[in-house]
Image (cartoon, rainbow, N blue to C red; front, side):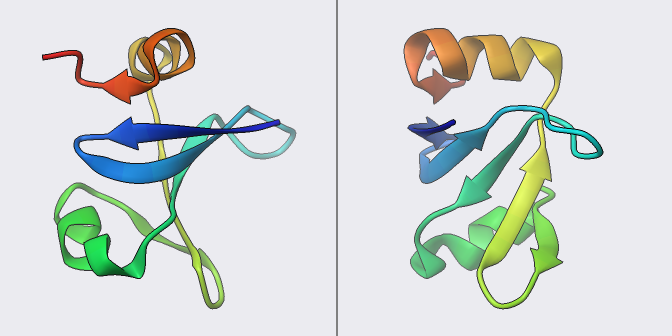
Length: 71
């Protein structure tokens, strides 16, 4: 199930882990592409699957509060 969140100020979809994929965030707006690449996002599929695997801590924060980091 997708949930819209803010990852380091960028609007993203939070995607739960599904075999074989880990929990991850997917960039929503192409306007944030440069920042996303600097934050470690990469292309997982063409044309708009710009994603980043998230840690358990990041996932819990995003799932509970809708943003990472909290401050």
